Every structure is written in structure tokens, then in C-alpha cells.
Length: 272
Image 1 (cartoon, rainbow, N blue to C red):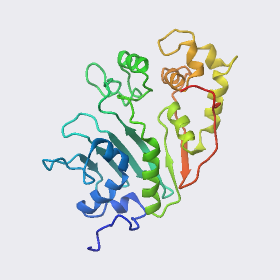
Image 2 (image 1 turned 90 degrees about the vertical axis):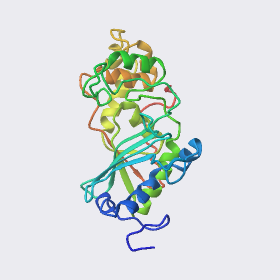
Image 3 (image 1 turned 180 degrees about the vertical axis):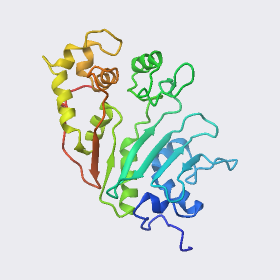
Image 4 (image 1 turned 90 degrees about the horizontal axis):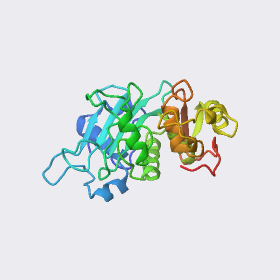
């Protein structure tokens, strides 16, 4: 093994910027370690993520010295959506920061919430919205930001990610929940709040009987039905629809490797 190679059990560089300075083959080898093994098994994929014709099923954008990396895994060459997408970065404090993480079921229907009918990007409805696609997605059981159903592999993804973090010699990592339901889901996997817990608790109070957000579930839009108060996913749609008067933002969560927080900002009886 040459001095720039990184084996499966070896310590990784402690920063994304350092990983990105590795030679391209070693850099690819390192980031392949973020792919959950159950995902490879589910789709019958090679650990090297090349198909039977030698075509890569893995894309990586990690410029030399850059503090960020974007990677995508495809179950089939030429498929429009990845089964996994991750955007990670070094934080100013030197910790690993998850900016975006998506797992898609490619066999499920697609809803174009990520682009307008004219083809303009919506940034998952944050920049602009495709309301017709969002209504269809919501009625199909999807949450805000989802273009397809998930694969139910978040537990395996968290475990794989923590192995990666530990190999970097780090004891904790951070994540930015893009939507309300993401934050609740992260809670269930043991994340705590660096900031934003007060907002989450305020949202819970708002949807309780007599709360101001519950009162705004007046059916004025498809996303504001009264039953949304009792469902995490439908609450998230109502918040995405602007029921709070401001966007959902300013929430940062963290998790310690191999440790779980017990913080819960919603009651356990709340439906998904």
C-alpha cells in the first residue's frame, strides 16, 4: 500500500479538506465508505459501484483542498435520481457537518417538487414551489422535499456515517434538518440540538389544543387541514406552506458517536 492509500480499517484524515487533497483514486475509495452496506445488498451493487459494463454508479464532487464534498450513488447507470445523495463539509470548529442527506427508492413514483413545470429548480420548495406536485406528493404519503419515497434505511445510514466519523478521529458531528419532520426524525435517532430546540418546542405548543398554529389549520390550502395537528408529516407540510409566517430555519443538531440523546420535542403518541 502506498503512502497515499487509505485502507478500510485505517484512520482517515480528520478533515474533509484533507481527504479532498488525496489522489483521486484514494479519495473515491474513502468516500465509498459512506455507502451503507445494506444499500449495496438491496440493489445487488458492487462495493466499487461500477456496473457489469464497467460504468461508474458513483459521482463525486470534492475539489482538491475544498472543505465540502458531494457524492451520489445510483442503482442503475443513467437513472435520473440517485438512491443516495450526501453533501458534507468541515465546520468552522473542525467537526463534520451534514448539509443534506437523501435516500430515494428508485422503484417508487417520482413527484417533481424539486422543479417547476417550466423546469426551474425549486431547492425542494424553498426557493420556489411546484404546488401541484407538492399536493400529489403529500397525498401519496411523502413529506416536504421528497421527490420519491424513502428506502427505510436511515438507521443503517446513521451507523455507516458514524463509522466514517469515528475513522476521522471525531467524536461528534452536526446536521442541518431542512424541514420540521427531519428534525423530529433526527431526534428519534439520538440527535440533540445545538440550536433550535426552543423553536421546536414552540411549534409543539402551537399545534396543541388552543394553540395558534392549530387554529390556522383552517383548510384554506390543501396543506392546512385540521388533521395535520396530529401528524408529524402533515405538520411539516403546513409549516412548509407558511403557517408560521416564517420559514423553518435556524435549527442545527448534533450527535455523539455511539451515544444517543433522549430529547423529544413531540409526544410519542403523535402519528407520522
